[in-house]
Image (cartoon, rainbow, N blue to C red):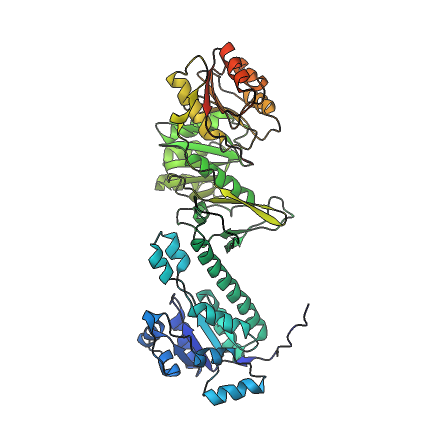
Length: 523
């Protein structure tokens, strides 16, 4: 490990600043404050025009370099009179000599933010438009200033301006501690920016090859109170290119801050609710659904979802597909819940929930269709990457394997159970009628135990009921348990060496057996 560079700890005065920003929020105020202290400001085209319109005197980059912007603005700051002034080390005589020979003046402050590449990609812009949002001079300037933070301060976000100028106001310049902190933020920003570009150009979306080097970067939304347990630290991060309707961009209307576990359960609840059409309600506990239902109205859907397992629903996370009105809010408030997420709320519903201010009330676009994305899971020292299991299944591809075909009611029950089982931790078995789940066996080490749990849970009658298994039955015992409980139809993937034996067991009990082409493990 090399010895740290012995940077001076004295305050560096700010005499000359370079300002070139795409996001102009707050920059006129910063520049005005700097100019009032006699700081000379050099700026690029759009930024210079903005500052001049705000009454700030600036010198153009062209006047500094003696060279005009070219290539439609692609080349403007890439010049020795700019980068020499940023990178010069004032403790070195050779640097001072080079500056004097070339008539280059040093910069003490660089204020730069970048073209909005991430936002451009997130809104689905054409590749040609996205390419033009790849900033070249900006990242180079940021890195140069951050490298030379022994002398130069760099600000890459409007949020930096107030603290930066407060220090200049109180000390007459910037301290090494501040410059080092800002340099760290600067390098993190350029790393995230390059990561976003690398992801966009590597064709990571579904159908493309996974890249040899997967570069990820996230921006911190905020710290969480703790992780899965109180002794664990935690924070929430967002993908810079996350679409506006992603779960991470939820709008919080009331309530305490969400916990680590709340967020995991919220994601699972919304993912399942999005698999339905029309009014639907989902209740999740510990990352597994304990109730899911549809209805002509949200009131019907929520009532049915809660009825599946009222005990497990205590303190649950609720996702509702649709707009919550006062009647729904009144029904929800009869129970203890942690979080309610829905597409929207009437004012009456908001007023009702306001009587229980600890309930977290969220607006999330639950009704949008799930989209194919990339899913990753952390393991020690590495990352597992896969296509997410979000593409809707085509139930028309199911094959009837049994002698008896399912009735329309049985098929509808199996279709609802199949929607739910893919969101249940494996091994998973779900019992349902055509409107709601009846019993859920989740996360068992053997499939037969998942079957036992699913048939032991119901508080509702197992009538006109179908079942779904997230993977094939390795033995007939699990199917027999489900049949003895009164289930008359089942859907499951094939693939077991005993598939014929399983279907024979269904025929012996006059069950309808549907075979799905896909399995849906969830770990």
